[in-house]
Length: 274
Image 1 (cartoon, one colour):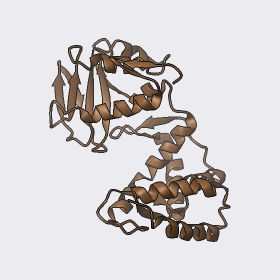
Image 2 (image 1 turned 180 degrees about the horizontal axis):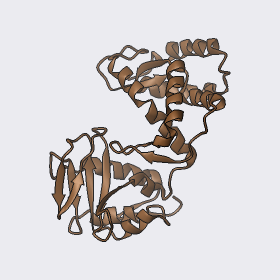
Image 3 (image 1 turned 135 degrees about the horizontal axis):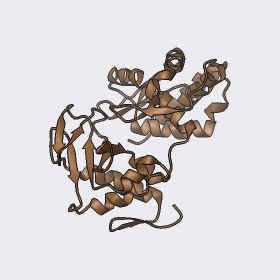
Image 4 (image 1 turned 45 degrees about the horizontal axis):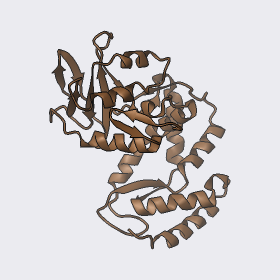
């Protein structure tokens, strides 16, 4: 960040330090209402100034930054909750289903047309919006989320070290960014430049106008993908090795080289300490 940043009574030297503290703090809050998963933070709450200072870091020169500067209360929303309506000071808060480990933030501003609205704490931490390139990559990942989830549910053992009953991650044998690079080179459909957020998970996704591009990407990804289940240790180790071998430089026509390198990876990271 360059200079120290203060959130409430806490001072941070780096953006990483601030991010780690915020994510940990969000997980610590116990919902006021177990059905909605909400924690309501008004001006009497000891962490009100903390979230107020965070909100003031929202990217400037935007409509929402003006609303956030006048926020009267904040709501921490725990995802993976029933779709219910709760009244807070006569304002309705709707709960969305999503990742059960995720936390979202909303704010209350009685002067605004939408009295209660959500905002991204990621944008607040960075002080700037995602680039168009990052939004495209996030949308491409979100578009294949169903395939990834279905594959994850079909396995319960790391395909490299053999460990069972752990928290597993889905890994692309041919790396995701390589498949994306191939697709962008051959796709004839105009590439999207504007994106939106999924109403439930709040993750970046394509607009309905770009459904043709999204479907074409999904078809190409299913054709090219080769997935495997790895435990976190093996996945982390393989990711480091990928950077060393620079997978992006391997021609798409030379898959034999890819699978030969994959065998080398398996032989080496079977012995990773868990």
